[in-house]
Structure formats: C-alpha cells, structure tokens
Length: 357
Image 1 (cartoon, rainbow, N blue to C red):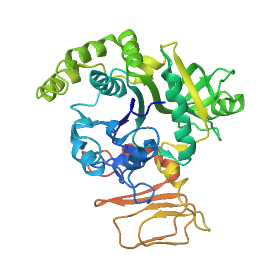
Image 2 (image 1 turned 180 degrees about the horizontal axis):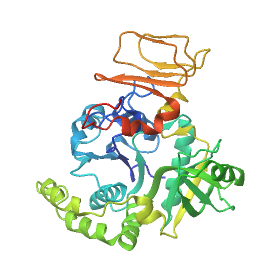
Image 3 (image 1 turned 90 degrees about the vertical axis):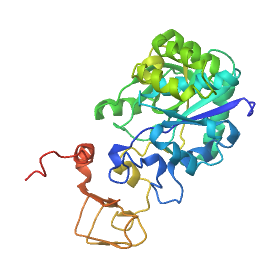
C-alpha cells in the first residue's frame, strides 16, 4: 500500500437531528465532543485514519455553512481540501465532487470515503482493515465497503448481505438491505453473512468515476462540466450554479445497489454511528443505577437508566427519573423518555402555534 497515493474523503455535511439539542443545524454532532473525551467526532475520525494516509491527503466535504468550523477544528488539512457544498444533495453528488476533484490532480489516487461522525473503538484493527481494503481496491475495478460484524439484532442500521466464501475477510456483496424489523434482524444475525453497513467505501479514482458514469450519468455530466474550473478562481461560482442541479440521491442507491463490482471487508471494530441517544449512552460509563452522564458536575438522585448530557451546566441535579434523556445545550433543554427518542426530530421542529396541551 502506497500511503502517498492514498486519499481520505470525510463527509461532514449532516445535521445530526436525532441528538437534539446537543446537535443542531448550527453546530452538528460531527463538530461536538459527544462522549466527553475532549475530542470532536471529526477529530477522532481524522486520527483513526492517520496510520493509512498522510494528513496532506485528507479532504473534507461539508456544507458551505461549516467551512469555518472544519478549518478551526482541523487546521492541518490544506485549505483547498475543504470542499463546500452550496446545497445538500445527499452522498452521491458529495462523493462525486470530491473524487472528480482528487482525480484532476491525482489520477492514480486510491480513495477512502467515510462519514465524519461515527465511533470506532478498535483503532488498530480498523487501520489494518483499511490497509487490506486499499490493497484490494488498487487491484482493479473493485469497490470495497466496510461491514461490521453484528453482535446483536440491531434495527437501526442498514445491512450488507455477503457471500459465504471470504478471502482474507473480503467477499462479494450479494445485496444491500434497508433497516430491518426485529425478526428480520434476528435472522440476519443467525445467518452469519450479514453485516452492519458502516458507510465507508474504498476505491480508486478511476473506478468510482467509471461507476458513476455508468450508473449516475446525470451527476457525472455535471462533474465533467465542473472539472474545467477546479482549482481556479471560478470554481466557487460554477459550483454554486451547477452542483444544485445534481440528482439528490445517496451513493447506495446511485451506485452500490446497481454495481456488480462491490465487495465487503468485515470485522468487529467496536463501531457505532452514535445516531441516537441510546447509542451514545451505550458508550458512556454507568453508575450502579445505570445512569450515564457527560458534564462537569451531574448529580443523580433516585434515578435509574438515565442519560444526561449537560456540558453547558456548572451543576445539574436530576431527581426521580427512570429511562430518560436529559440534554441541555445553548439554552435548549430536552427531557424525554428513551422509549420516545425516535420522536426527537419532531419534538425539535419549530412550532407555529405554541405548545400542545
């Protein structure tokens, strides 16, 4: 594996609405210290990829609204490697923009694409998996996606169905599956060849451009029009004009579910997308009553199985709650039963007529 030809693209444009009020459109979860480690999620993402990629070859695709946040938190990444989407168009246009731009200067690049806001606990194993995937993708028209060996019947993740005959943990993908119900998730777990979809992809620049040309020609055409302005003073102007014309579609629907050249590399990496409060709570230390907290001085009295994230408070006193989320950030407060956390996105939406009775 040639680390000089390896590039890492970090997708950092999401708003993390299921972790409101900690995560907001103004300061989404990828830029926040979600677990109280002293590091934001995007900083942790960069650090786990440093064993396989020179920091000068990192790229971040983000909203035009977050460019300054990226520059502040990742000052070592070259300024012209922070790519500003003028409008969110889902992951296929985001990935196409980054990969077309990389190919313009580095046509031999071998590229990893990753979300900015996931957790990986087994970082040494993760680096080993990435090196193996890079070696495999460099061998030709092959796309590698990362599958996480499931340890429970999880209904919050998409799944990858793989073939049975793995070579060094790499096997052909049979199908991508949407988030299942519990019975289906149990069947996936029992089968032994279904993996959680981590949303991490490895390919050469030539491979992904060829695949997007084949399966998403509308997006490819726009990128070809943009390519003549890359690295010029006109790039921002033409990007603002052309990028919003891209079809709004995920890379999974645009390419992954159509291509015959997809492989999965699988392992137990201690991975989580930290997509909701339950996932965050699963990675926090619990007291003897099952309570978990992030904050300087959080005091539980008569509480059981609660999650409190109150870094803005000097002291937080929480009494008499069970199976609840308590989060305070920027003048916003959430107190919610864990069983209702799927409604947080609705709870946080602006109200037009005042609170319900």
